[in-house]
Image (cartoon, rainbow, N blue to C red; front, top):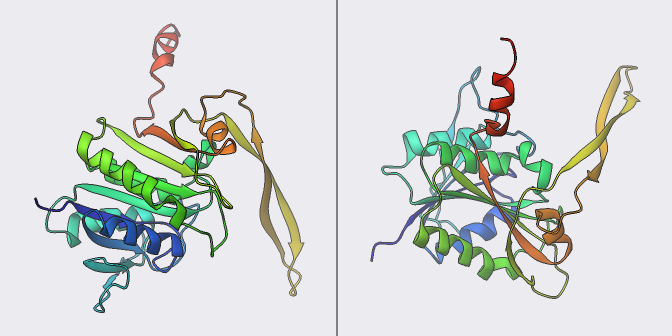
Length: 257
């Protein structure tokens, strides 16, 4: 049987250990083409490049992690997927896998995530897509313990086909020794960031700001991604890119507009 074509991307950059691990895992399932940012693009959300040019450099050396070919792109994660689908690949990939992100993209973090935006961009173009994140911000995080779980989720997605208009947001708890307890299908937890800016003065006397904040979990439900992660489970949240609040349409139709 012909192996599936897997597009791999991320937002931490092409040298990120999470991406390198994902390439190795996906190379055990199919033929991998990598198109990833040439520098870190965390928190870029679904930004695209419109006022500048884009470059995509093909790495002529053999991939150390088993990819057929690797490209580094000067743009955002969404740019990488757009360029891959329109210019680099000679056919539509069977699936797009984004990650493995260094840090959580659960709950409200999905809004800001470049990892998930890359997956969503693929989904918009009709390509099944999954974003993977590990709840460990360390550059030297251990990804190997999640190998079989990641491969299982991707294999199931390829075998069963993804629901139309849905992208999977998968988050993996940080594990010190044990393996995750299992995989739970969840809803996105209600949460927010209580943000503030740390105001400072540079050596030239100019003010500048660092964004800081504390994560606020507003949801006590046991069916959420945050609950699953806190209790040692991998969370899988079906995420849609149709942002219509369908439940509000009837109420808005009652307005005198």
